[in-house]
Amino acid sequence: MSRDYNAEAKDHPEHRYAYDFDYLMHEYMLRTFEPFLASDNALELGCFEGNFTRLLTQRFASVEVVEASADCIAVASDKTRGAVKFHHSTFETFEPSRRYDNIFLIHTLEHLDHPVEVLRRIGSWLSEGGRLFVAAPNARAGSRQIAVNMGLIDHHAAVTPAEAAHGHRVTYSIDTLRADLRAAKLRPVTEGGVFFKGLANFQIDAALQAGIISRAYLDGCFELGRVYPDLCSSVYAVCEREREH
Image (tube, rainbow, N blue to C red):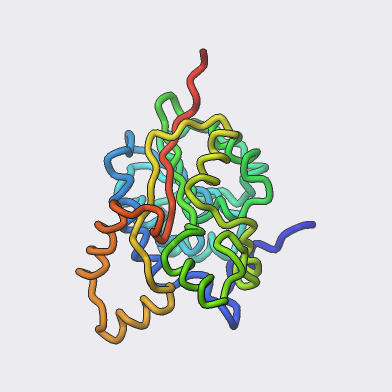
């Protein structure tokens, strides 16, 4: 069945595609990835409206994006003001003309119909010594476990109707993410969680707007996430291609 990528990226009455907290998370993700970044070129796979893309342009001399939604490309292109080369394509059909030192797949893997097959393709786009940075929403995040105990979600790894409306196919934990990466012949250099999370995204947004919590509080949650990765908002892995024997 064909997918409408423009529709999947739109807000729905019961669930926004992205909250302000999601954009703050981009900064924490880059802070986590910083020690492992290479050279000066980057490829982002899936850009939504270009917030993470804009952060990449501040770090890399050359940034390219592959995005299946024309609507998202239009918004992201305006936000990045000509600093990025966009490819309107699915990952399954994209044919790069070069290799990349840094490839970012941020909260996008969970949208793929055939994640292992796509990960194998992506691995072939890495330069010698290049790295793939993958992050996905965490099935075992503290807020999600609370929602299960409240009866709002059937089980940790469930895909809720709202998530399905936005194109989610799976909800990863660190072990299932690791399994897909290994099946795709990608070797994790490091893995973990980003941002200890006890509240839902909309609750964090509301608490920030009301002055109940501050950026200092969020910074504290980020540092605590290094200690309790299993309870973090996102799980991540930094990968390289498996070496030929």
